[in-house]
Picture 1 (tube, rainbow, N blue to C red):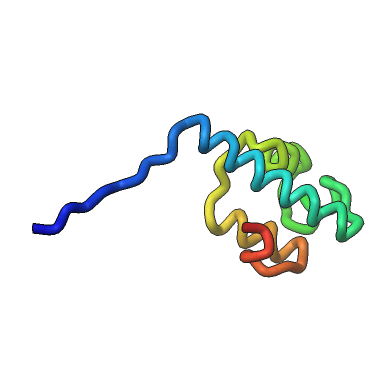
Picture 2: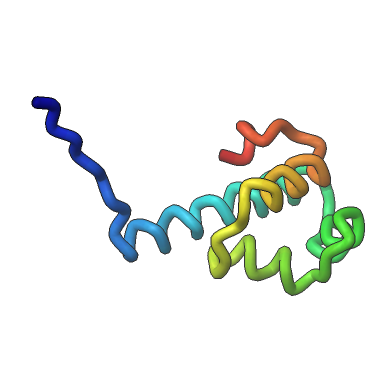
Length: 80
């Protein structure tokens, strides 16, 4: 009989991971010389969406991360 174990992310770990993701996106955006407004405009989003993402206040979908990577002209793996 095979025992399957699941690892669960605790809420605090989730917050930390989302903040790290946001910090990475901010870092890449600044390296590219873009403002939040410029990135948002290129994606058809509002600046507040980018602000919330960079602050770690939202859990973005895979597709949203793909859009961000495209807007920053990097591979998705570079963000993660």
